[in-house]
View (tube, rainbow, N blue to C red):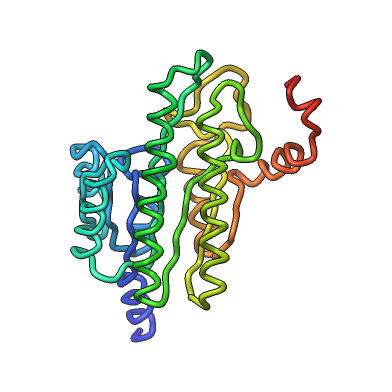
Amino acid sequence: MVSIFFVKMVFMCKKAIIVGASSGIGESLAKIMSAKGYILGLTGRRVDLLEALAGELPEKAVVQVMDVSKVLDAEEQFSNLIQNLGKVDLVIIAAGTGQQNLELESALEVETINTNVIGFTIIAGMAFNHFKNNQKGHLVGISSIMALRGSSDAPAYSASKAYISNYMQGLRVKAFKEKLDVTITDIRPGFVDTAMAKGDGLFWVSSPEKAALQIFDAIEAGKSCAYITKRWRLIAWFLKVLPESLYRKL
């Protein structure tokens, strides 16, 4: 009986921040992780959605409004959240945006870059340094299967996801060279039924709940990279080996 209580207390002491928890994958992950005993910091742009989510969770959750594209504000807000929570074990960056942009409208491209590149970089760097100071931690970034090849429909989106994957690889190597106990996980989803899943011809579309379950399993396993859902590994292999002369005809 004592050992069961001790194990429960250990899990309850785990603390994680989910950046972009107000909907989609981030929201589903929050529900799974709270049920597993995590104390959570939840960020997003919609305070009403965050507070509603926090009210549903079985464990404590701290809400912090944050728009990662507003860099100076996001830095301060992320720092405040860490101070409120104390030592954080895990940071998941699920915030992201992207749209089809056939006309290459500059406003849409800039919005994607500000969120997926600049915003991601700021939060990832702050999380890494937090883990470095504490000598342990786990950083998770939500990239995409589209990180593997450029998209003619959404060039900024695919490029920004490639940036996320490469940035996390750089942090993984940095952690190894500095002998840090810091795990870096690159999550590469295929199509998930969220607001960003747009366009014709979508296939193998996963629910956010199913995607979140597989993401949580990958996090718990400490994987460096995981395709979500698992069948998307086949598409990843295909995209990697397909010659550009054929890829441009797709």
